[in-house]
Length: 246
Image (cartoon, rainbow, N blue to C red):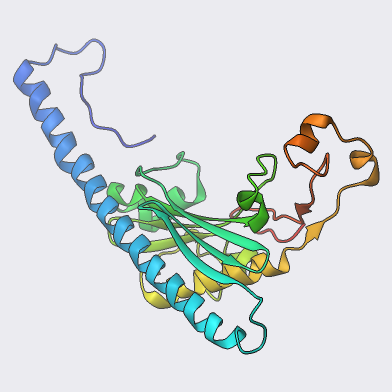
């Protein structure tokens, strides 16, 4: 059963007094709300550090690629407090910090781990997601194009990281990184960004089937949708129990 604070008594019991209710609300705020505020601060700090790491990677790669081919574009761009982009060649990685603290269903593998079960506060997480889009999809506002989730970083009250998508990204971390805590350090964050970039580069485009592009409406032409079915990424399966390119 999911952990909860008993704000009211069970049916059939004595009606709680107002002071008892206030005490229970206070206890819930003191424990759960305070924990979520702490986790949010950790998530903000991790996202800020992820920004710094990403800028370092872009700067290093730019110094290396420019003498070889100055037409290859590498760019870091800050969008908001909750989002930044890395553009490289025809790919775009979108990193997003969710503004809420989340938990999962009780049968979620992470919540069934002994580490989380030992302290109810460990069941709450800040989370950072990395999506892969074609760079032109946002540049030309191709609203029908799809982005693919490459991986997700979860951070808890103890600043421990959990990584979903380790196998898809071929991350140099434990195979069960989604249920085992990792240290929050620059090495882990850098590996996350670099692995996402490698996966994006290797995630090629598939041309649409001929039958799907035989017709083009005037509306699509006027909206600069040259194809009825745009090219799409090969894509990834994604989950705790493995996956890969599909």
